[in-house]
Length: 73
Image (cartoon, rainbow, N blue to C red; front, top):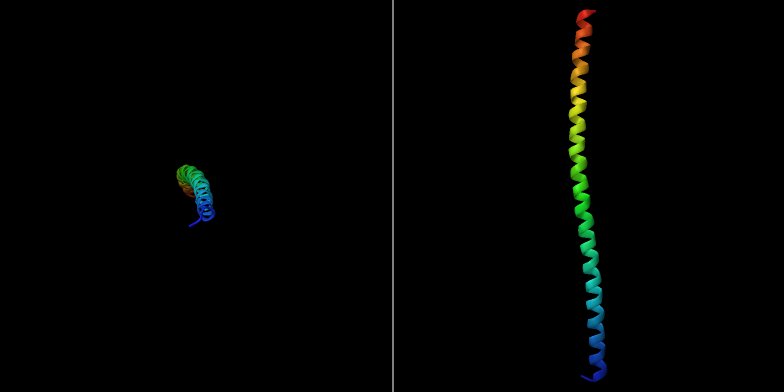
């Protein structure tokens, strides 16, 4: 194998190593974004459950008030 071919292989390996490092950085950034999204989704889910509980309590109260009005009418 001549010096020219060895240089070509070295250049290809260097290019692949640089691309691999760049892809690794992109993957780490995407993993961070995914983790942030999962945390946000969990917080939104908890808030939705809280609001649904409030909604159900209001419905129950409205039902009780409606029953009282029907009985007094």
